[in-house]
Image 1: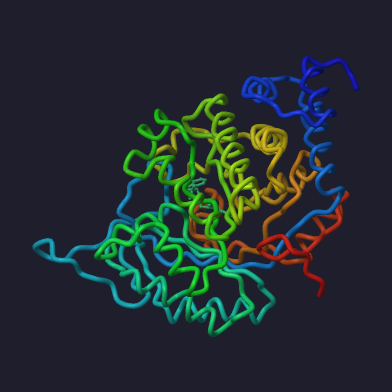
Image 2: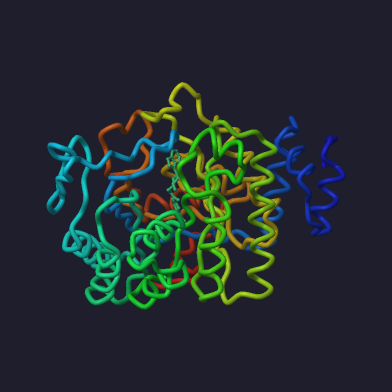
Length: 383
Ligand code: V47
């Protein structure tokens, strides 16, 4: 190995020792990017060799009406009110100044179509809708399970789960909400809504959203109930490098507890690269390619108890996600097909954002990987 300021950290990685916050900050700040990539690749190959995972999935965003106003979000729309402030509830698939909500029929139709074209997973999330009752979400899960029993339903971020518990009367606890959804067909939870676990960042960028205690409470309860989940970190806005590393250490500590004493745990970390376009923070430049690569590599090195690091190519772009396969990443996510929550400026009007299996496999082969189709819980699928 060439001369580097990272020699002591490299020694820890080779020995399989846990890294501390200071190590993470130094990895981020070092000009020696080659050593960082090499170390992350060592950790990645220790877990998976050259196996590189992807899945055939379909995202469904059921509504963009949301009661929150997070500064980093370009997706949410205010719910329309009629004259004299009376709610003017949209009907099925209504469009109103860019706002929409899908009926359960439409969601089931999309899910069924996805299953017919080979998908093994639907990833369903939406805004915090002020009117839809909890029965809408239960019915969504039940009817997808009836129509396509083989399809895994990965749905609802921790923030949505807390919203459901607040809209039920009498209030259901987080545990009761999760139990009922699980019983209706929910298979696992996606990782969204974590953002950055830090009070300063929270109050400046997403003040009205529940904080870290709420997010961890939902994932802890899910893990106790045997529901697996993912974790995320939304980076590249107003947070510092140290705040990112501390966020990862909190996830790692939660994972230690889940692995030791709970029936399920986090499957993967999904670092989400901030896309400023059309948000209140669009004066910010967003992460550069190198920041994306560093973040994915640092995630691999800090999260020694997470099996998988996923590059969500929608945000990191397919080309950079491909490069990251030698920088700690082992999962390319999936075919996606439609994605409404973020769009790069160049895709302003396109909700269709799809990669075919052939395209994903080509990216993986060229990076020296072995394309490996997986299900939502990382079981290998042989076609
Ligand atoms: O919760 C919102 C983030 C999340 C922006 O679990 C933004 O497998 C970047 O969580 N720029 C939704 N990010 C996406 C998500 C996800 C995606 C893929 C796979 C998985 C998984 C989870 O996106 C939101 C929020 O944290 N987000 N706005 C933005 N402008």
